Image (cartoon, rainbow, N blue to C red; front, side, top):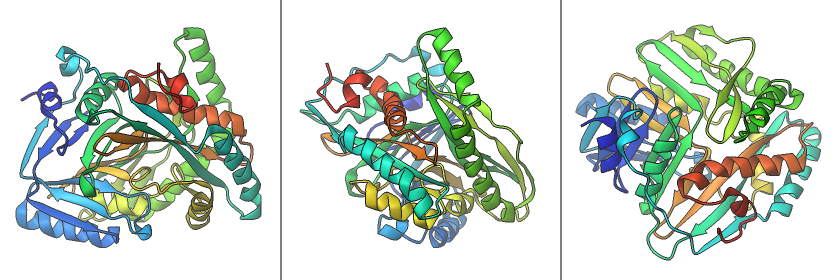
Length: 385
């Protein structure tokens, strides 16, 4: 079966991971491994794969210490194909339908206030950066159309990582992340941290101007430097060599421009697995802040929700230790007839609260487009037209 066939056969409860390199679809549960100690979990997964072979897929939460468990599954069946594009060109878009209601959490003025508080607290708490998110709760009259949204996300994203993973309690995490937390293939390790963002525009001149403004933005360059330094520092102990480019490059998604740095290393110990690397890297300043402990505390004080699996990681690891993990952003946590969409932004000393609100609004467009919704209506949590 080719990649389009795998996307077409995805059903809620399956695991789907579609990237520019491969498409993975797994079904069923032969063995499940959960826990809040992610480092111990990585060892348990390695032991299970040594016994059973194959692959383990799943999710890491934003903060396992809060009690939200990581969940890894050795599936009953695994199907792998090449990249989804151009195969998926033969698939048609799925109609999602108009939601019954949309509610912003918090309301936009309250998010602006939280950003303003965060900027003040950076100096008070000796923080270099903190990431604040907001959510949109979307309700449907009938069952949440998870499979339709996932298909449309794959059609929209030639690059990046489109994913859907079963969560404890029968929920589903789905999204299209532009950010590779880490991959391992043999002795080669790659991380591709992204920080610094500007919205895309349908107008070519405006789109180019936004990209150029991002490359010259002091605020965004500082935010990106903080992230790149942290990722390199975390990877350093695992690698014999580590190549960290001096300057970031522009990366694009259909909705956003980003600053990205592709970091490449050679493993010092060939026994180190992709899941062990992901556990060591997570959370990066891209989704939390730095220093991590202080940033997490401030996030807990300012965000009116539990992140759960948002800003965690989604991916896979095989019996050889190879694997790929994406940062779980541009995502939604779907229940039976509802889903919660998340979007966040990095706050540094030069952050403007209104601009940070606009950035989260632009990031919601990734899922809004896949759902056939008007991003401007979603920005304020109003009922979509």
